[in-house]
Length: 318
Image (cartoon, rainbow, N blue to C red; front, side):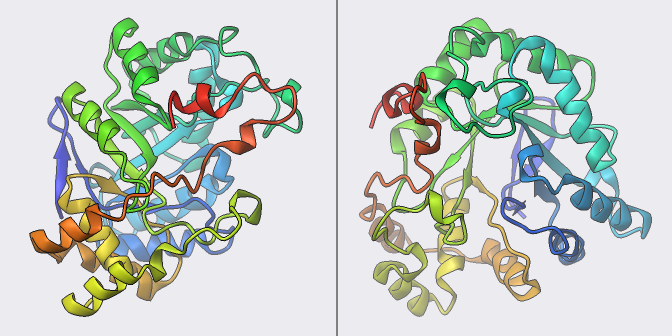
């Protein structure tokens, strides 16, 4: 399994298991099977509301001698209602408690959008806080303190534009080590990828297969189905693999870590096997031509009436 190395010598497997949208009663079995198959990178978040079940599966695998804690890479994320320096540690400790772990390998700011404490998800614009009221620099100070307290070995961000990332780089004491963003052939984000690489920030791609199982409210009318893209399908037929394996292999060959979600044992095996696929340069060029700058998780759910956010202020560009 390819890995990315961090400054302290830790290595994160490039292929992991995503747990967004994995339902209670299914996610634990999926995590346990993934570990049995050889996955060592599990991506979690408090807002996914399944960390207790994920944690039970991890602990069961450790107790059974299938894996040691030190061999696993566990990521979680700070939800938007816990922004601000003084809120980060308590939120991280809640995730550790739910997961039943002593430390995380990576903790990310999930979105650069603060919402009111106690609000799980905003029902109106008034539930969102103006960015100036809870600046990202304050939240990042809390992330730095959590790192220094030994609660997590690495810290980073998610859904951050280059501009927001560079604001943290300019004002923080510790550099974000990861930026987890949507990335797939229809949204390749070459400028952001290059900017992060120049800054020494690793990219993790979420929704690498197009996230067709995300809630209907997050889907656009007539949006394309990535797994049915004819170019991806043609490459898969030529390489003797599945379209999903083409999409995963493309990310890994780009040096991007990726976290496809599945609860199917067969799909878990198929996704893991994609790590051994090498696409020829001609196929990589065909995929490069597919970029439509199309966000599937476009952030419009933050744009409630009265919200202080616009798509321009969220993404700092198109």
